[in-house]
Length: 142
Image: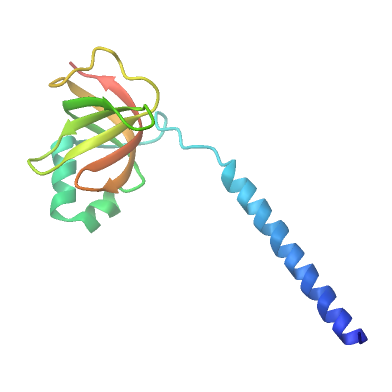
């Protein structure tokens, strides 16, 4: 091999090594990034019916207002269930067409039943015929 080819191979391998180390460092930092504290974060307060209507009427505008933000939503419970992972899920009545699905972080209070009015605080992840909130914490109103 000529001296020029050896230099090209050396610099190529060095560049690949630097990119791999940088990628590994960034991946490590992202994997270990702390979660947002839903209880301590400043929240947007909204009624369940208002949130559902906002998404039904203009989803892009509602996304700019609520998506990936901490929301404190108050509404009437229509259903309490568990998802495939065994997590508690509370569905709030929204509009005639959709509701608010809230996946709780931790266990729900045993006294929560359908028709109770509750306030939930969680992170909005978007709209899939229902507005979806994750990592919710609960506050019982009635």
